[in-house]
Length: 115
Length: 116
Image (spheres, rainbow over the protein chains, first blue to last red):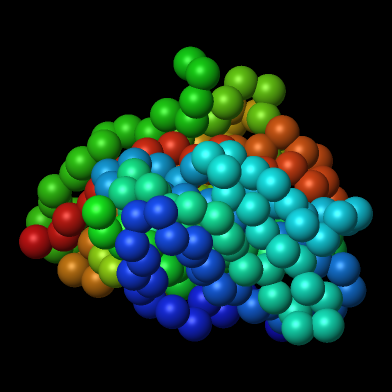
């Protein structure tokens, strides 16, 4: 069965420091991987996706993610964190296109950036 | 509208009552999804529509939950005889991609349901 794991419930980082939010996945075949962000009292917003091609994917707000097939990981990164990056981050994988196109989400990681 | 619209944004109901939650997807989006987000938890898949058919209902928690969609437009999620454990934010998302696509989902801001 396809699944996504976000091993950290919360990540704390000081403003200006690099940040990493971890994600590992389990799928049959090639994965379609996504990161979404949820700000307080808002819906989820798409950040970036990996479908094929370069392992380093760049997305919105200066975020990027690195696809690592051997480690089955898709960690979210940013070189210099901002206080405004504080939010809940979800990793997701698209289920194989059998009879469904649903996204399977991880449990989320709360990012707290301190001034 | 420009985005996915959900109503009501907040609903407080008494245990045992029925509730209807509505989702207006982005115009032209063929795929529509319902997810549930309990307090402090991740997103739980409920049901997926492609057009007005539902190829995947595997996430509906019980027969008290049902959903329908009119063409490639509005969807309603109905919860009958609500229970306290139904309290959650119900999120709707739509996508322009047909089956097997690689596109992202666009989410509404959710309907927060509180069952007393």
